[in-house]
Amino acid sequence: MLSDQELEVLLLDLESDYVERKQSLADSERIREAICAFANDLPGRGAPGVVFVGVRDDGSCANFAVSDEALVTVANLRSDGNILPFPAITVQKRRLNGCDILVVEVAPSESPPVRVRGRTCVRIGPRRAIATPEEERRLTEKRRSRDLPFDQHPLADATLDELDLDLFRRVYLPSAVPLDVLEQNQRSTQQQLASMRLVAAREPVPTVAGMLVLGKDARRWIPGAYLQFLRFDGRELVDPVKSQREVDGPLPDQLRSLDELLEINISVSAEFAGQPVEVRHADYPLLALQQLARNAILHRTYEATNSPVRLYWFSDRIEITNPGGPFGQVTSENFGQAGITDYRNPQLAESMKVLGYVQRFGVGIPLARSELRKNGNPPPLFDVTGSHVLVTVRARRSATDG
Image 1: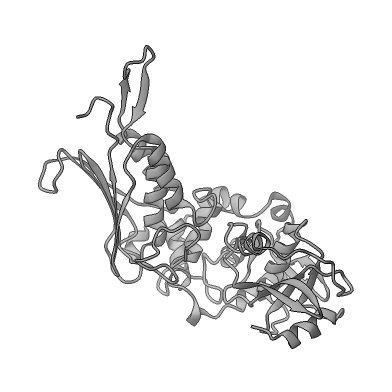
Image 2: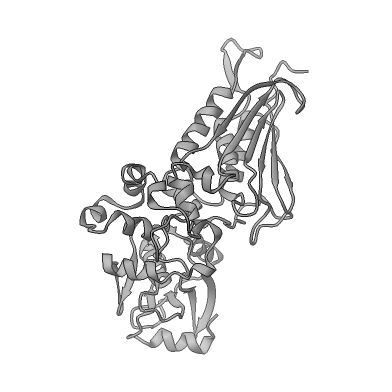
C-alpha cells in the first residue's frame, strides 16, 4: 500500500502513465476501464496504478464527499462481473494535501489479459486504449504459470484436438467478446483461446478451465468433472433409486442439462386453501436449486479429489454436496454471508459469467435463500467442513400438511 507521501507525489504528477483522476463517481464505466488498464500493466512496471476520485485533472481538490456508500460502490466494481478476471484492488479514503480523496490502488494482474465487458484496456502513456492483437499477445505471454490457480494450469499431455472448437466459435467467443471487436480481430483460434485462459499462454495445450468448458471428454483428464444425480423413493440412502444420471460434457452442455434435470423433477401441486381460485405451488423453486447446484460446480476443488458434485433428491429434501471446503477469505464461520466471497476457480467463474449462468458474483446463496422463503420452503442448511460443503433444502409444506 502506498504511503501518503507517495500518493501526494503521484497526485500532482500530470505526466504519470499510471494515475487516473476523476472528480466524482458519475462515470463509473471509465473507472472500470482504468482499473482494467492498470491491472494489465502493459508497460510491465510491476507497480500499482492509482485512481484518484475527488480531484480535477490538474490534481486540485474537487470537494467530493467520500462517504461509506461511495467506498462500497467502488469496491463493488471489482466483483460485479464486468471486469474479468477479478482485479486486485484496495479502496480507501485518504486525506492528501488537505483534501479528502477516494483512492483506488490496482495491483498488476498475475493472469492478464484482464477485460472489462469483453474489451482489453491498456495504458498508452497518459491515456487509455483498447489493446491491439499484438498487445494482447504480449499480455498473454506475461502470465506466471507457477502462481496461477489450478483451473489455469496447463494439461501438458492434452492437445487442442481435445477441445470442441466449434462450440468455442459458435457459443463462447460471441458471448465473451463484443461483435465490433470480433470483426476487427485477426488472431488465430489458438491465440483467442490463449487470451481467454482456455489454452496455456506458452504452449498449445488446454488449461484445466479450457478442458472443463470446452472438453470433448473432460472426465478423461479431470475424473471428477461431472454431477451425480440420484432420486430416491424415500428419505434414506438405502431406499430404492427412482432415477439416476451423470451430468457431464462441456460446461455449456452440462449446465443446460442440469437445468433440464431440475425442471423435470420439480413437482407442482394445486391448492385452494379456502380460496375459490386454484393456487399452484412448486415443491422447490427452480431458481434456488439452480443457484445452489451451480455454486457447487463453480466452487468445488478439481485438484484434490476425483469425487463429483452430488445432488441427491429424497422424498422430503434435496442434498447437494460440493467436494471442496471454504476457500480464501470464506470460512466455515462466515460461509454464505452476503458480500463475502472468494474463488478457488476464477477462470471457471469467468466462463460461467460469460455463458450467462452467473449474473452477479456473490449473490447465489442470498438469492437462493430469498427464493426459498418466497416459495414457502424452510431456509437451506449448510454443513461446512474443510473437505466439503453440504447444503440441504427441505421441500415446501403444503397448506394441507399437518
